Image 1 (tube, helix red, strand yellow):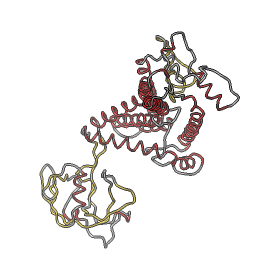
Image 2 (cartoon, one colour):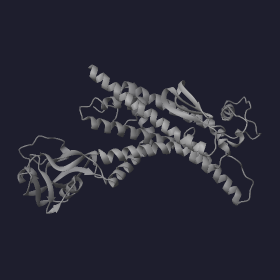
Image 3 (cartoon, helix red, strand yellow):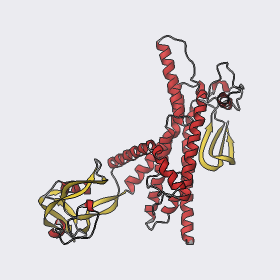
Image 4 (cartoon, helix red, strand yellow):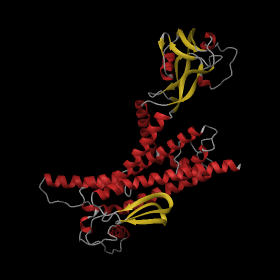
Length: 436
């Protein structure tokens, strides 16, 4: 490995680390700003975990950076209400009860005179929902802003109507071969005189501006058709006789479905690709697809565990869609900086990587499980429902929902998350996902 490769890899990892720290700080800023807006006291705003390497106090909040850039947090006074007896601290021989009491006690650390009106649990449920949702929402905003900005200014690799190459013969795509046999008929494109570099501007007399439209028209046609091509700055009309062939199936979004085939019209050429900016509408659609794929990936996480284990501790291959942690994403950042592509392409890929990371933060934190933000949101919503039901039926106010009682479950969930994170970490080190 050359010194240049090492330096570019380190640069890519460093750029991703800076983006990671900003994303975490941005997330916690959402919690901090809304908590202060609603008068909740926040003693700490920290980016990272572990030993503090820098901090400064401003007002009643300590702002700082810790050594391990694997997350962040703010501390709010009074995250959990006092126990039924009104006490903040008690002792129990039950380990599960002890967890609840420890969580309740920690929620009131650094309690000062006057804080009675600045406790988190005393705020209306809708205010607590806003405080807890604000963090993930900031990540969603950042993901959308980065994605939309890059999509509309830089663009995506997109197939065009320009001819990259002409097939010499008709081969069923299900056969997965490139070599023509003597019995294979000449492809309609070759017979019509289509050449590499031609740009098809009309099909059967109707203008076509994009590959998706042209591809659909070709698949719908069997028999004679005219092709209007732009060649050497002039338009020419070619006559082709499209044949029926077995070709790859496409889904509703126009994407090829691996391993699935249909019978359709066939011309026989490969489309060129260019990086083209998207319109605002197309960018919104792509962003929607990205969010949908992210949701599907979160749902599919449990099913990925066997393959991750095999990749980390066995001889299994690491799938392209395998979950990737912070270390794996940083390695991908290093690979991006070593790709033999223009600098603007590298910048765009790094930004897309950061956008995907922020989208994952949003989706993951919105899971309705403690200790994630989504778990606290569900607790506040449940409290609002209980109180409103009690009001409708003229029953006594049940009071705040004691989220501390769910801490044993939160510890189990946190333990599962830690184990999964360690498994991904090992896989990222010994068998990383690669883009080259």
